[in-house]
Image 1 (cartoon, rainbow, N blue to C red):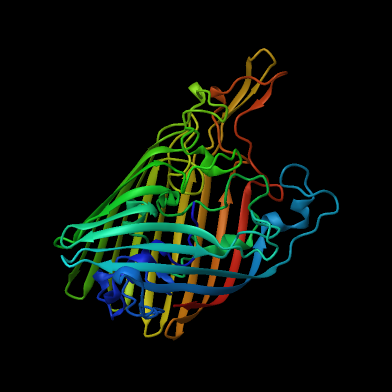
Image 2 (image 1 turned 60 degrees about the horizontal axis):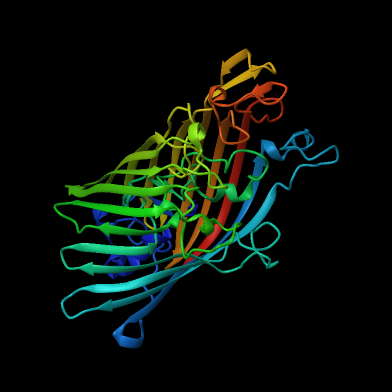
Length: 485
């Protein structure tokens, strides 16, 4: 999953393709986020934190090239139950041994991306072009996946082309977000606090726990897999989108067993992902209304890494649904979202439920208020996912005990403030509190679908412990500066 910081770059691209989005916008005309916006939820933010589009440069064949992007610097103070000395001294996958100490409470981080947009216009009014997104964070260095010690290796995150026909809509093709992700309506927030903001960049996630420690992300972006997307024009306030991806990989086939893209046709990842969404945006007197519904479905992996059928251990078919509404008036924006479906993990719709597990879901509500250059707000959300059934068995397979584990329950709330100091330059402060109960140490399973291990023993989901309990509490305070261009 592509994690979201303070904006979705695919929507940034959409905004740059429409320079009119940089004018003082009515509440209903904003399809998503323009460069530099630190708010979310289609509220009436006007030109808050928005930089003017870069002047176009002439290219071959009458095309134009424009640049965009952002630079973000953040400092944070962190408290995390996993980071205590007592916790790290525990034995097991999330312990560090008898001499382990707690991690530092403070840290800094950089995040930056560069966008290149190529645009053309035909004599019949058709527009066409391509977008390229380069990210310079979380790659390389000691904690990344590359070999460059700086930790700032350039990575091509998205690359897609488009053709738009007057009054007929737009076709996009390449590594781009899904239709449901592009059109979803999310709860308002100043700084994307508490849900899937970048607070998790400051905490430990590779400690034997299942996935990243958040469960309130929007419907998945299609993993930026190579796909085809159709986005309609707006009719009486309504627009819709459709997308299809053959599998969840991106780019060209690589015959490298350690590469995700080598799995493209191996049926070991999600296949035949279909995504659709519809949205309404309208104004009724002083009140702006933004309502959306989206869905996605995909086939779960059919084969294991050896090319053999998974059989009874094959995951359930993936489905996810999301609905959201935002009302805006007199500087206020209030709204919420509800997402549910047959999926697991921390990115909605990116991982299949194991057999016998129940569906997942979450909700978020948020409120923001804009006063000139200042935006303040907060939100609250809860999510739950099934942990399945655990059994203790004898060596001959006889069940000695059985219990249904409590669901994983994730509760998050936060407040934030953004001050737009100058065009394209914003200062922000964010506080978030997260309580995560009953975290599984690996993908949850239902013991009734598992075979008895040699010699018997406990079968099914194992839960992590934190300071003697099953709840991980995280508090993160962030202050930063963001330059968008």
